[in-house]
Length: 416
Image: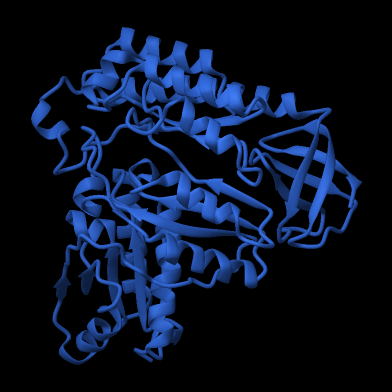
């Protein structure tokens, strides 16, 4: 049956949110879950993400002859060699495009651009922690990044719309909200107002910011001080670093140096003394010398992150790196640097988790993946397992952290 679909979501939290909006649009148009069409909500950030999208489509075409493959989202907007029956970034047009292809059987490409935020309404979600997308687009044009090409200029959701979705999600029983976007630091006119609205939602226990870019126009002492006055805001900040080398940061066109990044983390730790700091680091960007990498490695060690996502640089078309013509780092050097940075990341993660032992943390119980233990995340996003106890999903528990293991902590119920 053509009026059926399977959805695959790749990439960031914003993509996951948008995947829910796509599903809602198809459901409202009368589609049901099935194999008639495959919709891949794609990511353009890395070459690996592009290969993953291609693999999903290739496998679907082999298994479901006559099915309709749809490449949706960032790769569709950015441009790609990945082939699909339909290539589009237009959520509203998706049902009609699928039905049109079912009749005509001719490839369709439908790409739109907009300077307005795509108001999807309140997106129904099943996870304990609900996403609220409040921003789209980016105008930073970092040298390595395809996002401005894929997502367009910054667009922000209205405060009234944010409030309406927060209220709807709370009514559905969600007790934690995660504010997400492509570049939250570019939310306009006032990111603090958006966070305040979310934190003011009745029956919501916690609000979390998904990711922030270091931004000199936003991040001053007053910004972090005002955030600290919001009791429901989680003390977890994902502040993208990308490199600990000032030379590499300059080559990447990031617009800040390690001095400003250090200022930001010092202010975070001043106002959120027990905060967890997480980040992204790219190794092997064009022009990165052994000295640059050594500087990056030393800086990452110095900061003491709670978690580090390490990426190997992969060239993307339509990015500033293509015209900077910096020396390309050989693949074998990239691999060595990835392993070295990953080892530092693993040690940093271990040290952070061990620092939680002996503390009492608060979790919201999530849906367990196994009967062996219950699970939830602390305010600082630390995953905590509870063995030998049945916790009620969505309820708040205080846990005494007794141990730290491979990527998580272990706790015991202190009070209910």
